[in-house]
Image (tube, rainbow, N blue to C red):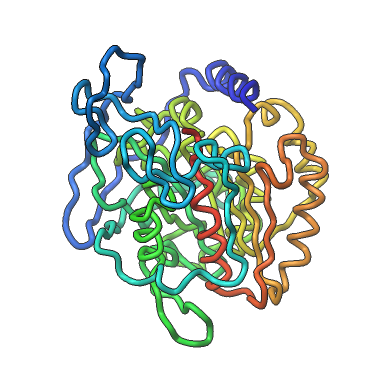
Length: 395
């Protein structure tokens, strides 16, 4: 996988050099208060130093300012042996490289206490942006740009001087950009026990169960909050293009991410810091649009309750350059045993993993069945819960 990463970076430099994003300036609508657009700052580089590191504060040496490399931590408390901070497990190879433990997956339901309000709560704001209408008019003419919006979660303590990983979360059929981060959902349908995904994010980040990250929830519908405008067949390709050319560059230019300037090249160079996951129709998009068409932008993928397409053709594409050169760090799948999509998704997952050289079951690819769950939020939130601790496990 290390060799593949080197090849991936080389391909990025050769293929995408000089590419510029076509994204238009975005407008952030705060909820509840305004957040200034941050200035980009250079990456912090940890180098060998003669400093004896006499003490650490917030994971940084009080003597020289270097970030702690977190050489090891306690398997249960996750307290770093060097600086004393709680740091997440690093599961990139299927086990934590700091302490050796394997990830523990839940297969029934997210613990209810993780949906309780957290003292250290992140912030959700609406980001308005303009995207090209990639469809043609009835006579082949270019259509006017479209005004859209996406919900964006910023973790507690978001600091423009730091850089953040980014997770894109996509809704399902009939949902909108509000589904994941704004609207309450039923914890155990049809119980009417309403919970918020943002509370789950807050609690998992606060306990270092996963890394602090920016989470963005766009929509695949042509117009925000206008599902009747959705055209099923062409929009798979259209959304993938919008994602590459508008959504990711807009996020990179508005917030502090590892893509330093929002260009296609900077996004490709930072693809290890970008993840994509979706539920139902959004999960189908992982198979039909994101894996085949956006590998240069993402290294981490989650598919919750949905799959589709020709797995032989997809595997062949993944096995052929340039896609073959982009390492897939994680391909997580999950569905409820009472979900009508479960059998198909499991079969297609197994077919794809058996044929794609870049996917290894149990190492960077997983399929989990959630006992007794149907096509409901309880299953999708459980997929997210299992997915988050595996993300961005590079240090």
